Image (cartoon, rainbow, N blue to C red; front, side, top):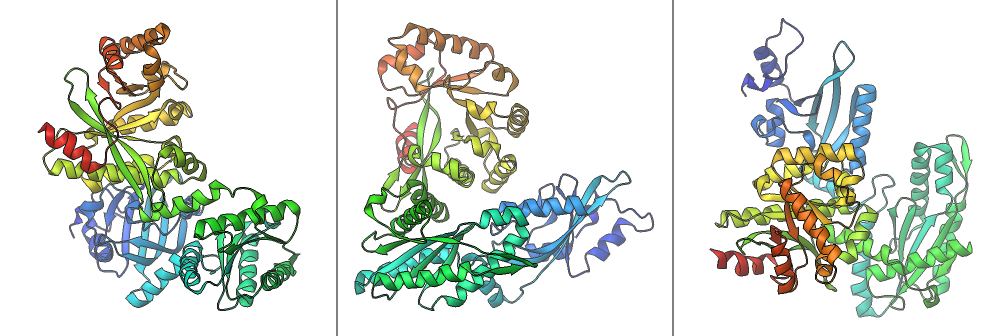
Length: 570
């Protein structure tokens, strides 16, 4: 390794040359990584390269996020960062991903280096592999994939696999099984009163109690937070289920002593039965959840699902299925052409997401995006969409379709994500596409929420080369001020304006004014929702730059878009 690695890092002692320091660091058995105060990598030693497969030139200037495996949640890294900043040091274990894609468990120490003004100027990361034995590593990885890290109970992924297996077995044997969904009723109050550490210990001890009384043929899992799911097989009557639940309720209700403090927990249980209440994982879980909610409302311990409880929560069903869809990449992109008004030729596509559900077929984003926003899954879905669009663009470019551009929509919550720009940069680097060929579309409400943060992010994206578009212009705040403050390249006039123009002169005048203003500011104008030739003639007279709508084509699969618009245009 060349001592050029140390070009941006000066050791504090005049008696140690960079060459001597480099020799020393390259001959220890731990990986060393040094970053600047912005967490950008400025030094790696030889052992780091041996462990990760990355060279210094590949990671120089990037952040350690490049190594993240996806196993630890976002909150894990936030806590790590907080500890380092507050105490100057963090020690622990985490899973990282090597250049080859292998996931490895590593022991890590992070040290914050401060100057004479007590300001952090560098971070040093020291790490080594814990599990060099591949068999042990695979076993550990299996554990963190299918078991809850806090309680060591099976997690929802293993539970779903078990229920699917039970469905197959019961469909042949014709024997029923029960799904029980339950929640620790008073845990939140205890947690707030005594603290999160107390709450974690309480959950661990409760989980141990439940695991000790669960038979080998049944399975209890921590679903999320204070909610649990449980499957019971091989029962002769509902009385058996009631007896089993009563044992659980009694065990949960027994006093627990934590750090000298005695507490008692309560739980409410909801039950659904296969095949009476459903024949899929999601339907059985949702009905057990509905029964539990009725038990909570009635303050009863056990409630079996009944039809008069009403329709189970679509939120619960779809959230479960959305998480599976992300994991299995069930989302597809469809591409709607953008046409130049002047030349009547294709200039690009807008990438639009569709959910290719295994049983329901293609589902419109109108049905699942609001839930994704509410549940926080929109960030994962948004990153998936952006990556898929970049991969498709890269493929088209490699096959000779060099003039094509793709625009991608970002939701409000995705735009608020503090790692948005970094995530986008990483995807651009990984896929090898140019930011100049990608448009980012945002709604007006996304822009107005936090003006200072919005301005910073938009200028960062603009500096990288992306062109910025405001979608559904005229339906939100419509503040002309942000057109001046923000680096906007394109505005898209909402389809409701286009539809009303032919019979509403005021709307027509507004669209005309928007075009005149945009032309003066050198902003392109896109007319959305063009469905008739009369609408096209109107927007041509008003000097819109681009048009989009069913008059030209519906959203198409990548293959259809290629055959119909790219190959035919060569």
